[in-house]
Amino acid sequence: MSSKIIVDQVEDVGVVEEAAQLRGAFAARGEPRGLGRGRGPRLKAEAERKGLQRACEVVLVSDAGHGLPGLWREHFPDCEWVLDFAHTAGRLSACAAAIYAQEKRRRKLFHRLKGLLYAGKVEQLLNELSAFAKVLKRRPESLSNLPEESAARILWTHIFYIETYREHMDYPRYRLRGWPIASGHVEAACKRIGNRMKGANKRWTSDGAEAIAAIIAARACGDGRWDKRWPTPILAA
Figure 1 (cartoon, rainbow, N blue to C red):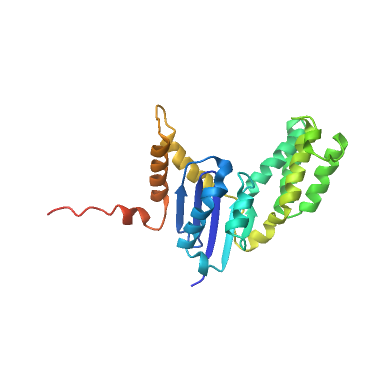
Figure 2: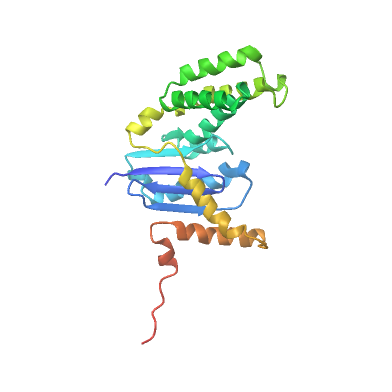
């Protein structure tokens, strides 16, 4: 039976879901920049446990940080990657703040830009942002040619980002297909681990932290993995 697989990755937590919301998760230590080296095979293995080979649709949802685009190309080359809408909207908020200091004007511009993104009007969005940026500085050959923290650098940074990943921002089509456009539930999974491990006076060795994170992730799975590993003991009569 065909199904839909949704794969999300945020920092050190991976989440795989079938359309029926049967969730699988894993957690591992390591530098975020090294995600592709160790997490890719584990994330793919988790997807295969959920039926990757027989799925009619496989959707990847993430931002473009921590080497994730390369991870998707290497381990999920034929799958559809949806760039996290909330993450891109956050970049538009930074653009609006760089253009207008006055809060009311900034908020109005942000909602306009966000509306264009949501409607899939990426070309119009880029044109409007570029018009604002060119008032400050013409298009640079390299971002390093612009002063750090300058409004021009902020704008051109986010313009280049949108230009690079625009093919993964077709949000009207994604919504029409019933696909998620943001990975907030994976952020929530990260918090589940963080809340357990980052309390006051808690200290962990590297191995201990990885072990506890793996246990938390196993309990977060919706496939009964925890119960199979730790079945309810049979009590003597």
